Length: 419
RNA sequence: GGAGAGAUGGCUGAGCGGUUGAAAGCACCGGUCUUGAAAACCGGCAAAGGGGCAACUCUUUCCUGGGUUCGAAUCCCAGUCUCUCCGCCA
Image (tube, rainbow, N blue to C red; front, side, top):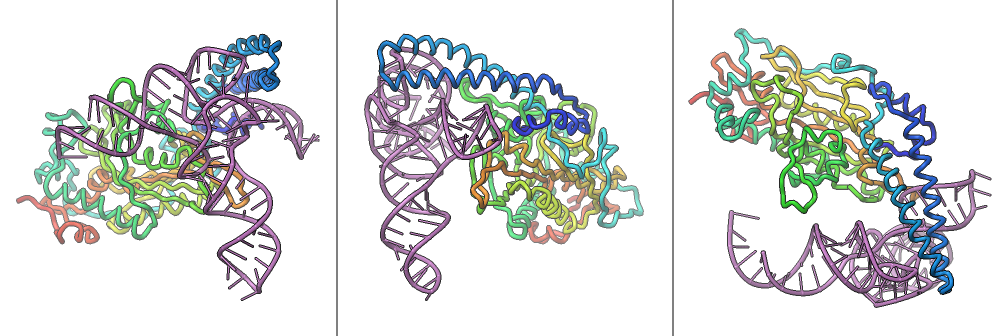
């Protein structure tokens, strides 16, 4: 969310900054609401002040006036609340402003490649898709998932399940031991307010799985990414600068409705309603955001280096970035069956955008209070890493070589094959 | 699920109708002392929002939302959460 105090300084500038997002903000409306809001606040405060005076004086002859004020106050307050609500409704649906490093563009076609790494494997046979490999090995079962649960779910079995678990453990170890993240095993359910904090709500409700508790309690949702729950660790807090940076990592299932992607990636486990992901979150002083973004992105790419998977790093254009992001790098891994790179990680700096929503601030050395910066990145998406390992390490007989770095996590298994 | 207790500032914790934004302690910051540190002593220390170029000033906030009252942290109602005991249970 944007800080109205900042916007107030120059409404037109604010409007212009959002143009690259292909968003046209009705600035006049904002301006108007903001003005009305402040006028009503003044009116309210004057009344309150008068009332306070009377109660201090304890003069019975004034008590009648005090009652009148109460009534007046009631209506002013209601009006002000409504205006503030309208203002917040508009503000909470405006995405973050792209950082000036971010290339202008409409969609993914305008993203630009920054670097390429690793060797694309050359096969002397036609490489199979991960789902062909998995089904032949009898270790991926989509039909079974359809039977028990529905479309876009999968059963991962036997050695592939072990591989999945190994990937998760190896990535966690790397981030915890080498990269300085604290390990968290969080709840997978978040309240409405928590979802609001990171920007999933109110705008993207269609993508979330809501779960029914008892009718009275606050609405609850399955997390679409651990970013939600990890970032909200600092919700409603003022932390000391000495506590920063804070870095958290978790490996969790993620749940997404994938509304609006009907017919897209319907085969295989590229796009599922449920998948594992190792997620990194950083909370930093706001000027450190971009440095932290580079650091975090490196933490993600190191995993791919370790696994020997070819990838490229892409910077997202203004039109393709997520709602809360000011700058995003996508890491895309090579998938032989598709003969192209596919997203396996996305690392974003959200500047103070989420912090304003969460009310997370920090005290700097001069005791000034400012909003923190937050970042999140996948390190990495487990399901897609599994796919990438299967496809890139496949052999002509349909077996899969295990990357060496994973073998300690798999009882030194070297190869997955049928039997 | 049954029976109780509670929710106050960064933390601990007093207050239980009228200058209480809130005692005290801890933590933190500044100073004196010390070669330095510790201790001791002195002083400072909430946030949000509004107005003002500024000094400054006003309003709100003692879990949340209602209510009673001229006046509520304090009384009443509803809700949320936490703790203890019993039951059930991975």
